[in-house]
Amino acid sequence: MPLRDMVFIGLVVLAWGSNFTAMKLALEELPPFLFVGLRFAILLPLLVVLKRPNVPWWKIIAVGALINMGQFAFLFAALAADATAGLASLLIQTQVPLTILLSFLVFKERIRPIQVAGLLVAVTGLGVFALSAGGNVTLLGLGLILMGALCWALGNLVLRRMGPVNTLALFVWASLVPPLPMLVLSVSVEGPAPFATLAAMSVQGWLAVLYVALASTVLGYSLWGALLTRHPASTVTPYALLIPVVGLGVSGVILGERPAAMDWLGTAVILAGLAMMQIRPRRAPPPARRARL
Image 1 (cartoon, rainbow, N blue to C red):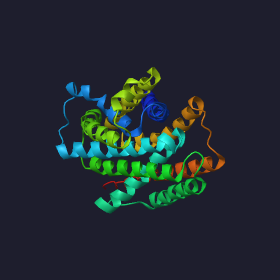
Image 2 (cartoon, rainbow, N blue to C red; image 1 turned 135 degrees about the vertical axis):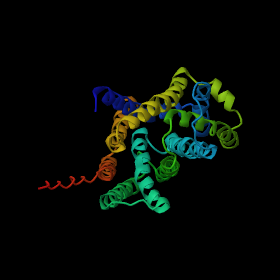
Image 3 (tube, helix red, strand yellow; image 1 turned 30 degrees about the vertical axis):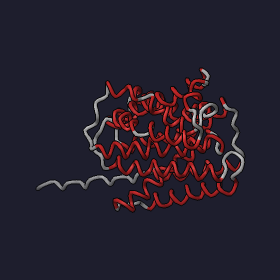
């Protein structure tokens, strides 16, 4: 992989890993559902410059409902009070085994034995967090993040049958879905004065929201999509395992979060399971042709 693309990978991992700390900072001033709606409403002006992807509307709506809205509604709710940013960046990656399992159940895709073993290891890691819940993540927080990961995995099923597409344009157009439902839900559940909440936000709060919207979607997805068009997915996607590592590091430096010993154990077990699922079998060399006499 050329140096330029390695730099791109580094930028994506840094943007997506540090994204969770920015979310936590924004949630100090915004309730979760209002934050989801605002995060995607900020992206809507980009519709002027990004052509709608050549895919059916129902697929755009499905991606918007599952990945943009469902995933982040559950994730932000967990981050608001029940999980630290660092552990959330790790636990949301359970979308990987969930995607593999759902692809097997829905599309009958073959699961290799090493993937089954990795799935079992990752589930064991989740069990560690469930047994030690109460410090950096509560049982409620763990359940909310797993629901967010399930929404992401269901959205991945839509993406797997979509074919080649401009990833940035897809997610920006899918940003049409969350703002109105999240505003209605926020008024119903979080209070009737969302605009007063926005008016009272500090500069730090607005910068955090802008970072989440622009760094994660515009920078992250545009570079990630470009990388996937130039290299095999098996070469690019394993680098996503670095995202929770960056997430834990950035949250420790900026927010002062310190995972407990059992959190480190659960983290190591889950990362080991995710790494096992990325292992690809070696292809056998083609048989040598016999020389003609």
